[in-house]
Length: 218
Image (cartoon, rainbow, N blue to C red; front, side, top):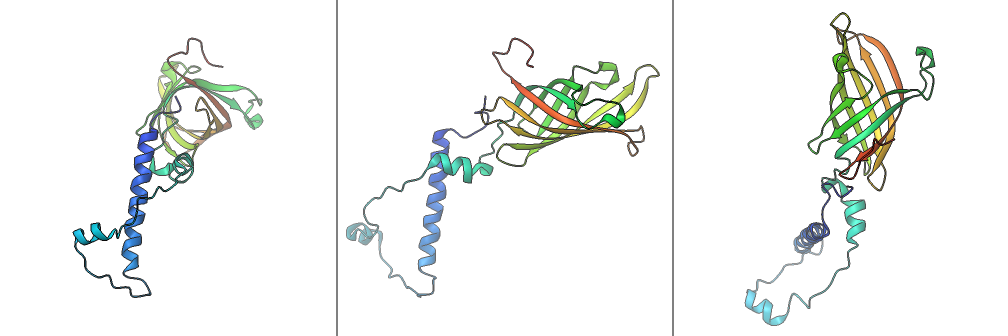
């Protein structure tokens, strides 16, 4: 699953080749405009072929894996986190709100889409309380991501809107692409959408769901 939306080896080869070709053109241009004031003598293509001006073919060594993974990752549209996940929110530092550390405060399934959108379905909130959250995300590093999504909380007893809950996540994907972890902060607003009613924070852990998943990930 870690291969989602990454370049294939052939794609990386083509990409690096284009970069090297562009670098070669820049070098040719700079030779005629540098401090030495070199003036090239006009020649026909036939003359160049006969005289071997271009020199013998050369192979240039390029560490494609290193270049693609470490230097050019941001140009590869790397979206390894895309997919379906099972997640858990674990409380940490909320004793003042009466929530002991280690308490699971939410969990469920979340989908990260390649276009930068995200959707979460909570397994701990009833649908009539607002169990679906919609969000947006961006990649902040080679394996790090930032997510902001909004849950709309409802009071099912009185059938009134409680307010939006803004949920911020900062997560890091594991190198194998099958799990991620990080921190979350839930800021529950009142119905006016401006007044903070409660803030809950903690850690988050998620496991990828794939075609071979047959039991609920832990």
